[in-house]
Amino acid sequence: MAWTREQMAQRAARELQDGYYVNLGIGLPTLVANYIPQGMDVWLQSENGLLGIGPFPTGASIDADLINAGKQTITTVPGSAFFSSADSFAMIRGGHINLSILGAMQVSEKGDLANWMVPDKMVKGMGGEFKILPQRTPPLTGVGAVDRIITELGVLDVTDGGIKLVELAPDVSLNELRQKTGVPIL
Amino acid sequence: MNKLYASAESALEGIIRDGIDGFGLGQLPTTRQIRKMISSYVGENKEFERQYLAGELELEFTPQGNLAEKLRAGGAGIPAFFTRTGYGTIVAEGKPTQEFDGEWYVMERSLKADVSLVKAWKADTAGNLVYRMTARNFNPMVAAAAPICVAEVEEVVELGELDPDQIHTPGIYVKRLVHNPHPEKRIEQRTVSR
Image 1 (cartoon, rainbow over the protein chains, first blue to last red):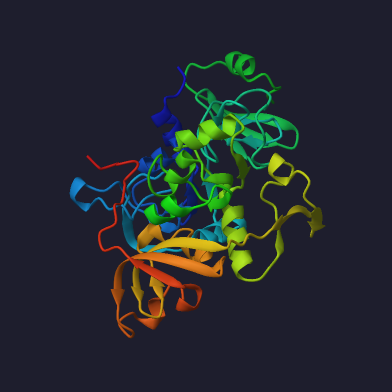
Image 2: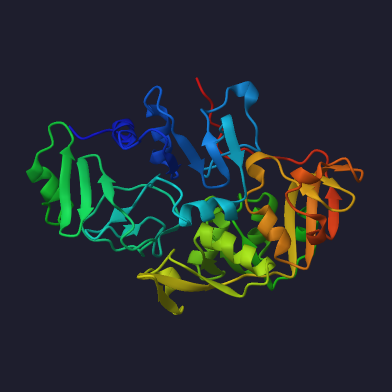
């Protein structure tokens, strides 16, 4: 049985390590925040300018000036820091973030990422989530940007030799994954 | 924002991070006062999307981190910079590339504007600005990227009332203040804990 969105988020949370600074993309990746293991010290970065994302607010503590990159209302945690978007992307570009978990429309076998538009159909900008497809056709967002892919069927690594199987979702066969993926899987 | 909406000329070129349909900056496309947009995300603005897909509006898509850095560089007098972001994608088409230390980078031009509009929490009468929480986002770079910066603020205080250690945008960048004590703040995604 393929993983649900929640199970994919749960699986992604297993990539977290103590002390990590982690950027969560818009959409499904924000669910990962719900599955941080108890006692693990993880700082979640919101690229609109916050390190230390807390849980969603209660109705009373909701604040229009405190949102994540997906424009959802959020809270801070003790030790949070606010900064500008230029500082935020400087910390991402500068290599200070340990892990980015992003939604992708398509990922190629070389780890190229496409997640920002489908020509002539919709215009969104970065973000959004779709399943992995064999060949990427929408315009690329990043070349060789992806190291590990988590889909509803399993977990795959992008290696120099091609796409390598890490783990299958329960009751998903390697055959099914191969058929639905369409690129050779090592 | 509503004033600009009434007075802007149709050839306006805008640099906007994004906009909600028919609200704030999101109003500009609906009255066709914009010829070209430089933006990172327009997903929530249906009219924007419609005009672009119909070829009525020129849209320059810029990854959000590049947009922030283009504005920061523009305000800082830096005409261009190199970044890995977008290398090999359509964002980099036609732009010079260069290898540094074994990695390939794209040259991005910086951005400047004639007028910039920002929203801050507090200002003093010298134009020093303090933003509130994640509402800081693009405002400091936008403020510096134009010779005329107009800041809408919720509170204007006397000189000396803001802690100099806590100023986010120094008053040198800010030319006009618009005092709006109760701005409408729309929440686009109301998410709460159970």
